Length: 162
Image (cartoon, one colour):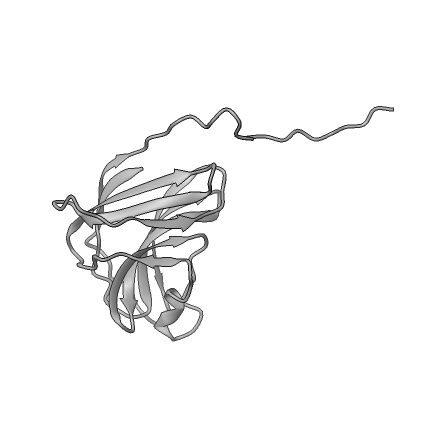
């Protein structure tokens, strides 16, 4: 999957903006931006997103499943690449400024069997308004390749006769 996105300026410590690939209601991989105690961050998450469970903004990021990118400038366009390998259950996620050809990808594990939706969400702690308006998606492409011949895609139940 390949797309360009304009990353919005998330303005409070208890607020995030997410672009998520889902399998049903299960998050496979997400690109997330927001504020940590150490400053602004943009990165990739594998699996369910941790939400604002308490007033501490670090609850948005408290996971070994978060992989921070080297870039964190907002209100510019980035090129995002997400390659999901359903045989190895690994996702390779890259993010770079649209006009810069260099990128260091992050490899994150995920669980799922298909992509059923592409979702943009804002999350916030109670009493913190969301004012994320300047964002966008452009040049969205999906590419696929066939699974190898020995990939198990379905297991039929065993029935006994007698």
